[in-house]
Length: 130
Image (cartoon, rainbow, N blue to C red; front, side, top):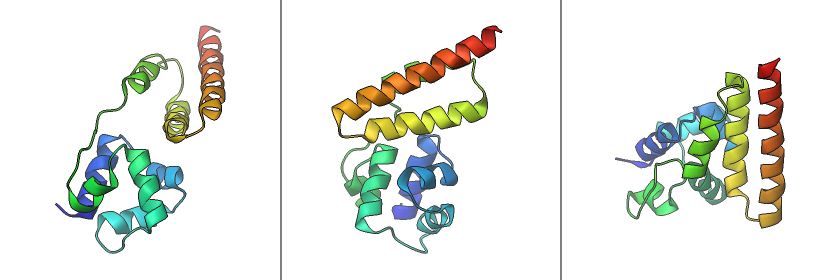
């Protein structure tokens, strides 16, 4: 399995399209496609961002060594179980937001972002009840 195969496997395991991954790591969908097809390689900064977004190590992506965790963290699974009342587009946006949140290094920013996510969920519940 080469880099492109591992990237595709990790992306699909994370439930992301090429476009969604590209948005998360601030690149173009065409770049993600080129990486998966073996026509190009990401620079080091982008490689770090991809590994964070997909919850895999750089070592696993580049060589297949080391550990990887394709499972979505439990708290994300819990969030997803509580969002049946919002549209698919809202779910994708919330999922993207949560992935970005998990990659955030600053504890205060994570807390603020979680508060925003809670407001989104509450608005959706009120909208569904009407």
